[in-house]
Each structure stands twice: as structure tokens, then as C-alpha cells.
Length: 340
Image (cartoon, rainbow, N blue to C red; front, top):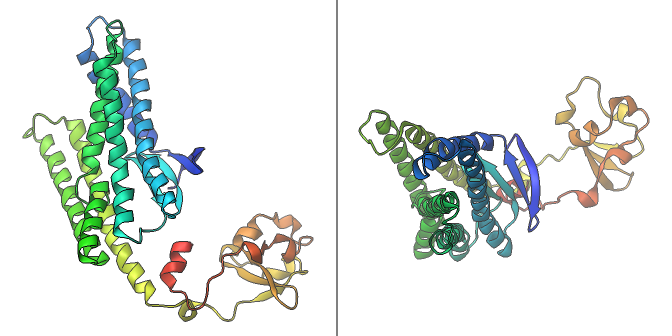
């Protein structure tokens, strides 16, 4: 996701924070400080207590979301599936798992472990709420109560049987396992996901008319936004599958260029790059006269200040061939796209 900043690495997995996360964190903090805690605590409680609890509760809740996504990622890595990272954003968090599972059981395990971790966290916060004596600090008990309910809600919501929710992936894995048809399973899970998205949007819009008094206007707006996001994600998952199916029918040899320009490793960049061309679209093979020793693309050219192009050679600026991904002409283009 764009506009994301790296935070830490956990189990070798990069954790990033998208700028949109601050919107949802601010929203959660405001609701807690202005509505939830004032309604649950004595009226003489100081405002600073509400805000302190709201900040701590919000951070613990998003830490719980991170645990949920880490569970997905750790299981994926254990199954040999690459994980690019985890990003916290306005709709919670997403684990960027770069390949689909190759077996129904692997898909099931990756999907179900997220809600299971949220249920475990709900149980931990529930035990703190019920069995630990916080009579001298009732505000802490209210925080535990909110956290166990929210984690339970995350587990239940994510198990809704609609793609790309965890429940949708569980549904796909079950249908896939029973029928052996990954395409049909994805289509069913995607349509269920779009149906759930339309239901969320309907409930959200209806709440604005006062038909559903138990749902606030703010929650209704959130339901509509979440519905739009889920509908787009479910539709995109099906389109992505159709694209990959199309690409699997074509080999690298069908689409590759066989006339790629080669430049000498000893040539300076000024003589290599034609004047006035957009360097982002340039791509050269670099040769020592007998074999290809590297590649020179816009990325490598941008790394060298243009004032030094007369003194820096293609061999010095290139990406060495041992660091370049290589694919066979017989490989299908879908696998190339996923590798990229």
C-alpha cells in the first residue's frame, strides 16, 4: 500500500503503518473517550481518565489486529508461502501473502488461524475482566470488557462466509476440497463476499433513516464504507483469478522480446542513454563482450546523479546478473507475474 511507513520486523515479517490508520485510530479513540467510557464509569471520573483509557484501549485493540494478521503470516511462511509484510490501515490490517495456497488444507489452515487467534485474545481479556480483582481501579475492568468484546467481534465478523474475509477463504477451501475445483470455489466465495458487502451497505444506509435505532449514524457510515471496500476486494479476487488463468495459457517465449539492446560494460552512461528519452522505460543488457553480466534499467540509472554519467560506466551502475531473477522461456506468464 502506498503512503505506508515501516515500523518493525516480527518473525522476519515487515510491519507497516498506512497513513489511513490514523483516521480509524482517531475515530476509535473519540468514541471510547466521549461515549463508551463516560457511559460505563462514574460521572465524577476525570476527563483525563477517559482519554488515557481510550488511547491505551485503542493501541491494545490494534495490537490485537496485528496478532491476528501475524497468525496468518506465520502459518503461510511455515507452509512455504512468501509473505511480503503486514500493513495496518483504515479497515484494520492486511497480511500481504503473495501466492495462493496450492492445497485446500493449506488454505483452510491459513484462513482459520486468524479468527482463532482473535478468539484466544478475547478469552485472555475475558479472564482478566472476570477473575482479576480491579475493584480499586474499575476503569481498567471496563477496558478489559471492551477489549474482549471487540476481539470476539473481530473473530465472528472475519468468519463471515464471504471472500476475502477469513470465513470466505474457509468456505473456498471446503468447496475446493470437496469438488477439486479451485475456480468454482473462488467464484462461490467471491459472490458470497459481494452479497455480504451489499448487506453491510444496506444496513448502513438504513441506519441513517432511523429504521434501525440500535445502530448509530456513525456506525452506519462505517458499514457503508466497509461494504464498498469488501465488494471491491471480492470482485477483484475473481478478476485476478481469471487473469491468472489467461496468463497460464501463454509462455514467456510468446511475449518476450528477442531484440533487447546490449551495451558494453565499459561504456559510460552518457553514451549509453539516448538524450531526451524517459529513463523509466529504458532497459539494457550489459555485456562484457562474450556474455551478459547484468542489466541496466531506469532504477539503476536513477541511482546515479546525471552529473556523473560521463564518469560512471554501465558495468558500475548495472544490477549484476547473479541478482536478477531468471525464468525459462517455457515458464507460463502467470508464474512470472506472481514472481514479479
